[in-house]
Amino acid sequence: MKLRHVALLALAILVSGVPVFAGGGSEGGASSGGAKAFRLSWAPAYDEKHGLTQAGIQANAKIKELSGGKISFDFFPGSQLGNEREVFESVQLGTIDSAFMSSPVVSGFSDVLDGFDMPYLCDNDMDLYQEIVNSGIGAAMFEKLKAATGVVGISYLINPGRDFYLNTPFKTLNDAKGVKLRSMESPLHLATYQALGFNPTPMAYSEIYQAMKNGTIDGFEDVSVSVRSQKNYEVAKHVVISGHMTAAPVFIMSQNAWNSLSKEEQAWILQAGIAAQEATKVTYQEQTPLTIEFMKQQGLTVTQIDIAEAKARVKPVVDSFCGKSANVKQIVDYFNTYRAQHKK
Image 1: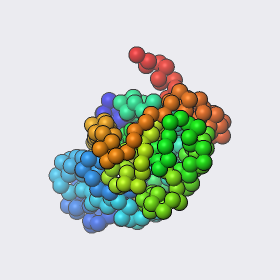
Image 2: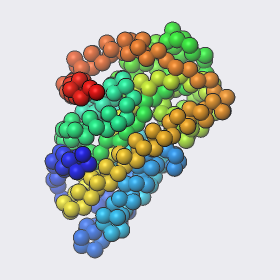
Image 3: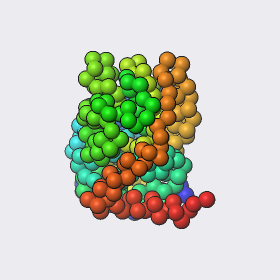
Image 4: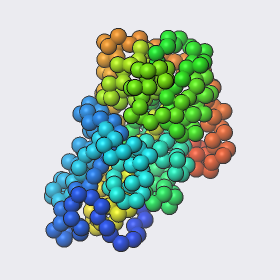
C-alpha cells in the first residue's frame, strides 16, 4: 500500500515553474552538492508524545536517510511562524517551506479538503481513514488543491476524533444549549456545533487558554493529546468524549520548495510524508487513551456523548454541505462507497 500511495501522490502533483529555494539552505538540489533545510511549521507545542511532533521527527529522519543527510527539516512548532491561516498564506507565497495544516484552515481558501473533515466520516477509526485516503481519493484531491491554491500536498496525516472540554457540567446534548464554544472559523465547524446545540465562537487556537480563564468562552474542542500539550486542560473542568471531527490534518509544501527538488528528491519527500502519516496514527493510537486517564488524574470529569444522537443532529449539516459543494460530495460519497464495499 505504501508504494501505491507514493505513486498516486506523485501522479497528483504537477511540477511547474522555476526552482526557487525558500528554506534555510542554499539554492540547488542535493544532487548538485547543496544542502537544504526546509522550515516545517505546526500549531501545537513541541511534545514528543504528540502525533505532529512525531510526524516531524519521522519525516526528518526519513528524508535525511534517503538524501544522505543533504535534505532536512527545521522545526517551528507552537505557531512560531504565525497562526495557521498566516502560515498557509506564507506557504502559498513560498516564504514558509512546509507545514502540518488543519484542513478547516484550508477551507478559507478552497473547499477541496472540506469533505475529509465531515462529522463522523469514519467513526474515529484511524486505520480505516488511513486506508481510504491512500486508496485514490487523497491523491485526486491533492491535485485539486494545487490547482486551487498553488500549494503542494505531500500526505494526509491521521488524527483521532476531537472531544469537548467544558467548564459547565455535561450529561446530554441538551446541556450544550447556551455554551459558548471556541471554534475554528470553518463554516463546517460552526454549522456542526450549532447543530449539536452549542453557541460556537470563532477564535484563534492560541487564545483558548486565556479566553477560558476569563470566561470569554465556556469550552473548546480539540484532540486530547493537543489539550495536554498546550496545557489547556488547566482551564477546563469536564471532558466530553465525542470524536465528532478530526480537522483532517495534511502535510503541505510550497511550490518554491517543491520545485527546488529534483524528481528523485521529490519522491523522497513523498516517502517522508508517508513516514509522517504513519507516525501520527501510531502515536495517537497509543497516547489518546493514556491522555484521557491523565485528564482524570488532573481532576476533570469524563463523560461520553450520545454518538447516535449526535450523528442524527449533524446529518443535515453533512447533507447541506454535500449539496453545496461537489468536492465535499465526492469525498463523502467515496468514503461511504468504500466502507460499504469493504465492510467486514
